[in-house]
Length: 107
Image 1 (cartoon, helix red, strand yellow):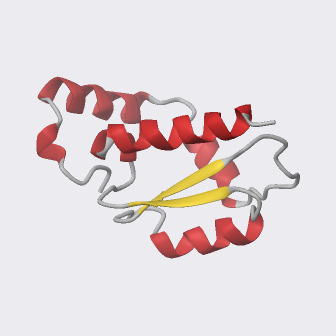
Image 2 (cartoon, one colour; image 1 turned 120 degrees about the horizontal axis):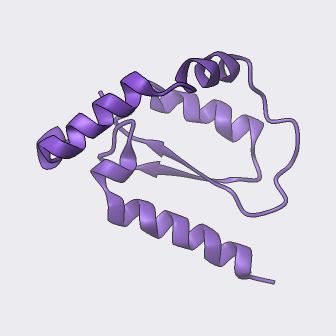
């Protein structure tokens, strides 16, 4: 459910991710807070929200709510990615980040 092609991850990386999820002390607090979170201000810098096309934890249709609540953000769909797109397509995520940084550098 987290990555589209888990076979591409090394066993060491997979184990480290499992331990990080299991031992993450802030996960429950973040999940609890996130249920009722609403963006209450307008970003003053370029913001890009990437939504994974194959997302099963936060399904793609929920991106519509993000578009509605943060309309000034750039919204992109990440094809072929699941919940952790940096694992599925690091080059694409790097490109999205660099595009956002470039937008911030424009006068």
